[in-house]
Image 1 (cartoon, rainbow, N blue to C red):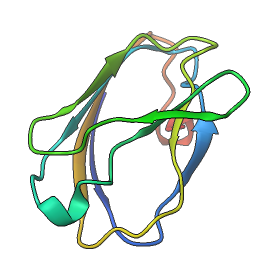
Image 2: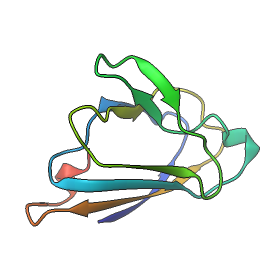
Image 3: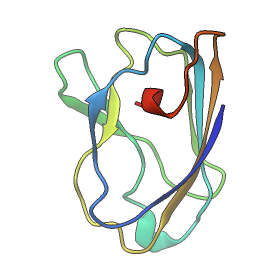
Image 4: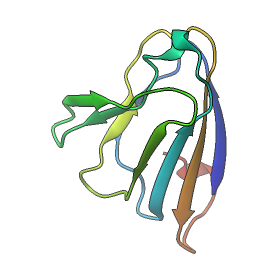
Amino acid sequence: RIEYCQDTDGFWLEPHTDIFVKLFTMLIYLDGDPKLSNCGTDVYDENHEFVKRAPYGLNKGMIFIPAENTWHGYAPRTIDGVRKSIIVNYVTKDWKDTYELA
C-alpha cells in the first residue's frame, strides 16, 4: 500500500501505533525546504511522552516494523508550506482499505 501525503497547516496526528495488518512502514519525506525542517514525525515512548522528532528533509525518513511500542504521531505545530511525504506499508491479506489508514 502506498500513500502520497500533502499535509498543510492545521494537520496533526495523535500518538498511535499502526494497525496489525501493517507489517512494515516506511515514511519518506519529499521536500527539502528549510522552512519545513521542524516537520518530521514525532516518536513517543509507551506513555506517549515525546522522545524524538525524525529529521525532515528531501529523501529523509524512517522505517519501522509496527508493534505495540512503536508510538508515533505529529504534534500540532505550524506547517509553513506543504509537508510532502510517501508512506509505504507492506500489508497482510487482511488489509481492508481506507478506513484502516491510522
